[in-house]
Length: 163
Image (cartoon, rainbow, N blue to C red; front, top):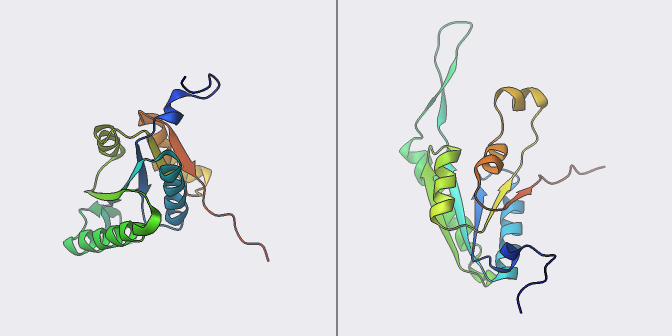
């Protein structure tokens, strides 16, 4: 019989959902949405975290540039433990959950991993940055949207609480 014509075919064949997590304020919302979709489609969920490079300030006087250096072993281990804790927190969710960590990977490497894992959906969070930041730096989420081979669900941060 097949799916109705008005729905894209990929919606009925999701087997692998990847949640890109960075342990920021939006991570819980990303995991919540990824878990919801994995449960709905009977898909496996893979949590992917990239350990970022660490800033190092070089002292040259008034204009001290900030350079990036590889993450420390301590940071790598701390992030991996946090990733495993996040994975383990989903143990009772009724879905298959695994975790993978990359070190200093750019968006291209992350998308290569998503492709090799045969992702059917990538769930990523967005962060509020100003126009100047986005002009000069760009955003990780925008890069994911440009390079992804499958649908991407962008999860916004929680709205600010009003008093």
